[in-house]
Image (cartoon, rainbow, N blue to C red; front, top):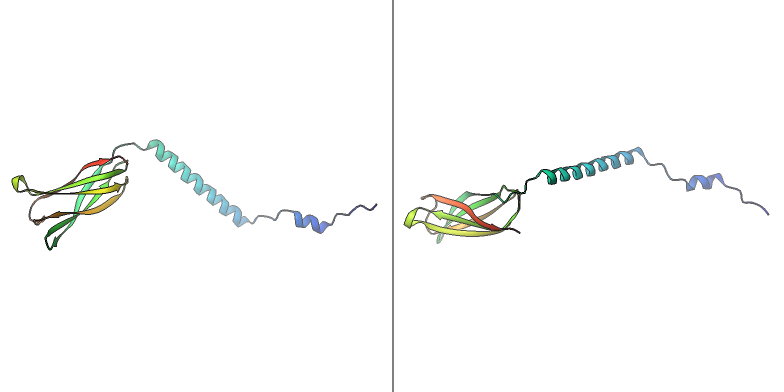
Length: 139
């Protein structure tokens, strides 16, 4: 009985192809990026304070309308937690002649901002206008 002879060309075809240097470099860079991202997230989670939302409100512009005025505002959450149902209140003027308007922002993530507007019958640029966040809920 004859024994099959090994063909040297079959051994070369079955061997794994050599991986190019560019692939090793690309995979190394990818590994470093993933490791750095995981390290940063772990560090941020370990050192971040778990404080409440800190919402600052500022007036951007006042525009006249056909039946009054709108004071456009921006609410900025400088706190560590998100807030939902953020109530924004604006008071125009002082004392018995004051006028109040309110708006609600659905959701305000930590470190973000969202805009809105408050309607008034009198011109907000003619009287003192105070805007502030008056309440929120935890999402």
